[in-house]
Image 1 (cartoon, rainbow, N blue to C red):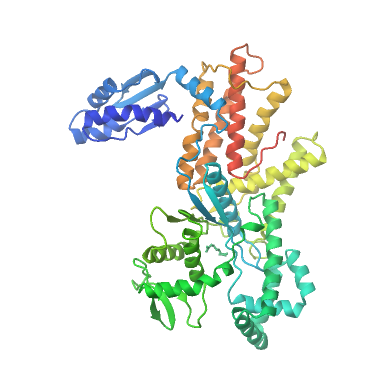
Image 2 (image 1 turned 90 degrees about the vertical axis):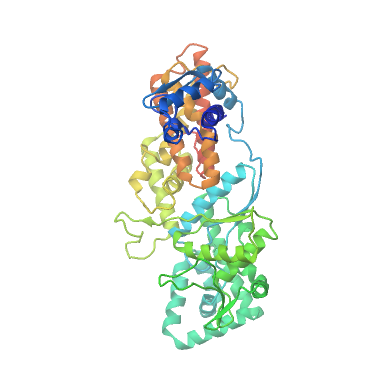
Amino acid sequence: MDLEKLLTDRLAPAFTAVAGVPVDPVVRRSQRADFQSDAALALARRLGRPPRAIATEVLARAELGDLCSAAEVSGPGFINLAVAERTLGGLVSALATDPRLGVPVSPAPETVVVDYSAPNVAKEMHVGHLRSTVIGDAAARLLEWLGHRVVRANHLGDWGTPFGMLIEHLVDLGEAEATHELSMGDLDSFYKTARAKFDADEAFRERSRLRVVSLQGGDETTLRLWRLLVEQSERYFLTVYDLLDVTLTDRDFHGESSYNDLLGPVVAELDRLGLLRESDGAACVFPPGSVGRDGEPLPLIVRKSDGGYGYPATDLAAIRHRTGELSATRLLYVVGLPQRRHFEMVYAVVEQAGWLTPPARAEHVGFGSILGPDGRMLRSRAGESVKLVGLLEEAVARATALTRNRNPELGDAEAAEVGRAVGIGAIKYADLSNDRQRDYVLDWERMLSLDGNTAPYLQYAYSRIRSIFRRAGVAARPDASVSLAEPAERALAFELVGFGAVVAQVERSLEFHHLAAYLHRLATAFSAFYERCPVLRAEEPVRGSRLVLCDLTARVLRQGLHLLGIRTPERM
Ligand code: ARG
């Protein structure tokens, strides 16, 4: 299916025969030919021969006749390959009848745990949780489509010392009032008021401390109040997920508290393995390779000096559960880059303890921050962190207004639906089209623009193709013969057959900006094709062939956007 791979497989044996050792021909798309290999240049020094001579000999040995219409040495020793029209047309035809669009199901499906979203109970979700939710959901969708068993783990922050003050504040407010506040999504004010009382009021502080003790001791009344906080928050988070159109459900909450019973055994096991050291009354592991700025070894604190367990202990227990009970072999943590050190240490400890052994591995799918227009961390006008729901609602409102302007013929219901798809799509795409390790600036104008590497541009390209079919009242015949005489047709065909390779690369790297860039290239190639090549006005069999290209482009755009969690309205 994948042309780069087909050509690589033909050139590799020839290179190997010439060099006497295995050589990667490094076949790439090129401006000068369809594909180019520059491996002869790299080999020249090693073999002590001129690169052109090497390239010529490779071409003499390589079997390319059935794939290429031309294969020649150029410049200092490049190999230029022109793909035969029949080869390319054949690949497009095969795609057209393939419901998976050239993306095979994984031959080695794994159980993958995707740890993502993970907001904290009774605390507003912030933009960091937005990134985690958007990236994690794309990962879950893509891996599932490839046939992996995906476990969505929403590692809710639902345990720890703050619950003392949160429960006491709930008691002060009364259950009815507290429930109302939380269910309205007033999480920020709830948390902040509790915090303010804790900081200002000694008696409240003392009550909070005692409350933590009752909570950890399993006191029934306290647990009931704690559950109330958790349930109300979960209910609120589900409304955000619904608005954000992500696949997380109420069954995916696996909060920190769900590992409570495993924490004791985890520490006991670490002790038995001789990995525990005491440091200032706390039980610690000093993973190899973890040193602070001063060169001193850094501890991972698994049990605090007051006997309590914190964030690191829970993550150790969760890994044990994920590789043990769930038999997962790939553990993904979609969490901001500031937590990189934490995860490095946790992974080092579970490797030492033998709870994470190959083929099982853990990956921190880290990401940068969302910045405001001023290039600093995104803040509201009042200087507070931006409320996520507000952001999403603004996106939908702006997109709905733009949609109405552009297309006054849409009815209210459809305009609202399109506005939602475009607004949420724009937010997600702005995130996923940027290298996730980098920070990016939230720019409304840009992300909602119909031009450029944006969701609306891709959604518009999709709806435009659908309208071709609607207008003509035709459907593409996937078995129509494909001809690619025009350069714009060829260019589009090359993009179409490249979908599989991109998805395979993102499966490994979880760098969704490669998929985004691909979809943008595809839509751009389609535009150029559509400008130069009449479709409905063409004569058969060209018309049928072009309809296949249109239909395939729409299907790849739709599937690609779907993997990113973005909807594709039929009209915009
Ligand atoms: N609740 C944490 C936070 O808001 C994120 C948890 C990430 N997942 C994990 N397994 N540690 O920062």
